[in-house]
Length: 203
Image 1: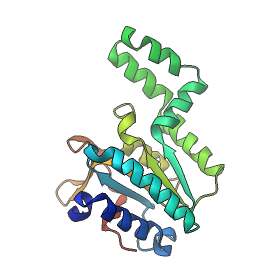
Image 2: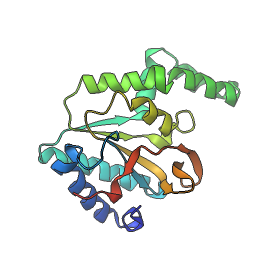
Image 3: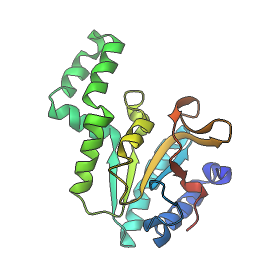
């Protein structure tokens, strides 16, 4: 991974990401072989607010270049799914009355990546016209939803356009351990090797 870019000033990261995502090479998914077009933008959780602003600026700048971004926030999407079932307000109001394990199991069943979350993401993709997807809200839904399970369930259904996941932590690679998503830089989300680090890409 390009450690310089991961810790570089936000302005430098913005310039790199805009250059790469705005390139035809990226949009045409060239240079990735037969892999799924999934990309990770890791960042230190301490700069989460700055990265939120960066993402918004990227969307606006890309729009000016004629590139359409579909932004999917996992937290907002999870709330939508629970609202549809009428459970969101119930769990918020009664959170203190329930065992944490019970709460975890209930939320996970309502936002299951395979049967609930991935189909909801696919529906949003089918209803939109876009060139690239931005996936965010990863930290807000942890540990109820693990980012690697979302990506695993999207591999076969979201491969027509590039997908960029903004990840609060590290996306590390090593010959010994393979690749892993380490959320918040210290908790191993799980091994996931089919994504590319966007800081390593060139326009």
